[in-house]
Length: 221
Image (tube, rainbow, N blue to C red; front, side, top):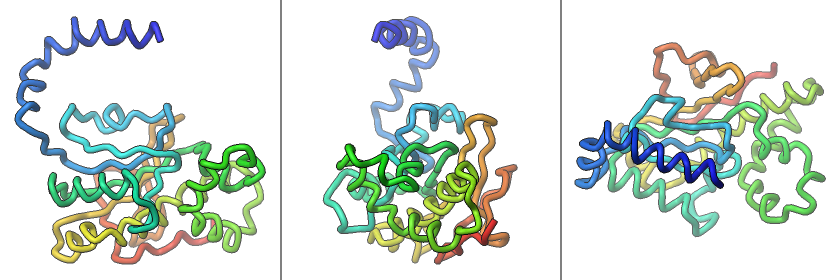
């Protein structure tokens, strides 16, 4: 906790003073570039990763970067998505998974969740991911490779869930919104984006891919 307190003092005495005008302008409102949906994992810092300033990303975080289908739960995820699209009028939504995801590891190993009933219930919104891996990736037995496939498939599944939200569906129909699927490999700093033409996640190198109306699943590795 002491590190957090010291960090606040450093922010106030150093960083804030150099960007005071930015923070004062933010009083008038926010106009973020995108809704960024990612995992709660402490190893991910969306603003650091994308080199964005306060006010440029509207961020939604939870275990496993999950988007429950519309109506499945009456929770903050649906409200965040609705506000981002209808009020803030973001033009892009990114669903960003990451390497070595503990939530996806739990999805692959249900006994780990025996004493975590809330986590187990939450991961039910990734049941399609689990079934895809179980039925289509039987040839992958090595855990790390299987986990990587799970992370990637889960991004595609959550993109499909996003499309069930009325505000997202409406914005997509008028071509006012683009959905993106990313995977961040934190140990190398690489970001991979889903390329619908290749039906694969490929290194993000200046190309912006728009996901198709129905995300095609990844071919077997």
